[in-house]
Length: 191
Image (cartoon, rainbow, N blue to C red; front, side):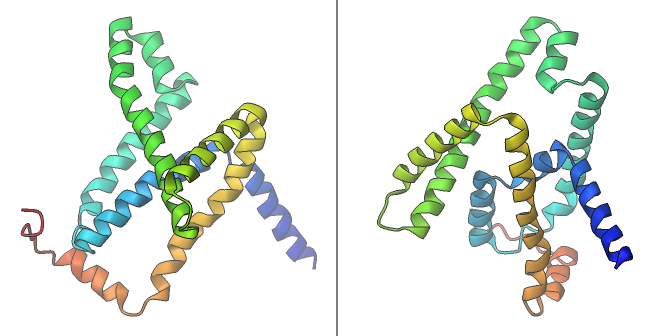
């Protein structure tokens, strides 16, 4: 009993130490990303899975560089650019990143609206998008950051589903290995 209690207290203590990095890592699975992955999967199946071998090290290197910059400077990329580079470079980076950020937020809200429409087909996706926008703005304005961060941290538990799903399908592991190791590039669907 004492050993079980010790394990629970260690898990609770460890969970309390997890910070915003968990939410940042999980934020890549935003609605626009899931919609993109779903469309690519529907169009190409598993045939593009081999790109993960190339893309993952590049993405991990970028994430690690950004994390190290944040760790050393205790600021985000914009603050670091503002502090160490001339203003024209800062404004150029803002000019490039601002439209991408706004369009990504719009795609996220549209994706959430589309999911709402899937759940309740009689209500248009646009209405759901407006409702989600109002709810999110209200939560951001009225809730303190710590409360939002703790709720998002618990919502990250949903990501464990990604580890469970592959084991629910029979023979998928052999097919995945075959597609990874013996891929033939077929561009006929693209052209």
